[in-house]
Image (cartoon, rainbow, N blue to C red; front, side):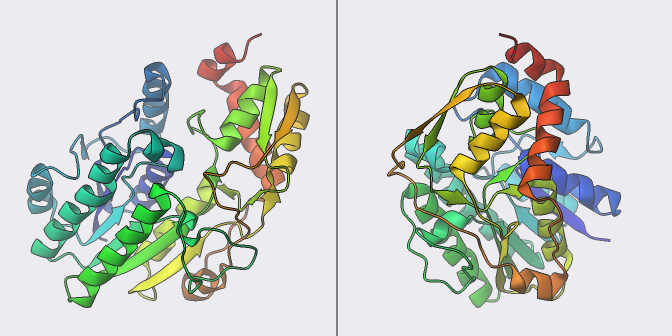
Length: 323
């Protein structure tokens, strides 16, 4: 069994990763400052954190900023074998609102973490990147596709990949890079596309679809967490990059229509494409299937149904969807 640090371990994907690792018997420490990024209502963050904490074992949870000197103390205490770095500003909108703060976490924090990992001679550094590094792309994109990110979030994610690769090149540690896409599911914040579609439909409101034919490779959170854990623990993933998605693109219009169908109410309005976001398709996951048996199970219809059922039974969201 390994000693593992999961940064951002109370996030949507992070707490699911921690849950899996703990059930497998690994010793897991978490860093998470439980930020609301200045845009998420505090009562929502408090509720989500309380619920996420119910899924993981209590104990080694530390409110330490990854850019602080306290990270060195944490490494000295736990003697980590593996770092799974998930702490980040979560998406382009949040970075655009405060790019300086985003860079502090995504660049300064990453560099600090890499330096401390080098000092304490960790074996493997797993960097959670994003499909946004590709920029515009269509279906069946493999990991060697030419990356042309649009916007500061994607640019900083790609820069993070290059930094981690350079530490590996210098023999500081081995690395694995993971590129997820459009992850959704239970215990997500409202200010994301699927959550927003679902909750707006449940309130009988109007769903804004920014580009009817724009597609995303929607990935259920449990599939994403399974892939990250498998990649982190595999000996076949050293110094490699992987797409971890469902590998099946669906249009934003289809996603909105499915939310309306499940909720039994609401309307939708189709608007022009959001120019701040690239056009994306489905990612090829053959490398992940081959190297560590990644096999996503949940398609969009099932995933949306599971998420809708959870929202409907949530005491917090039930109060927020009453007309």
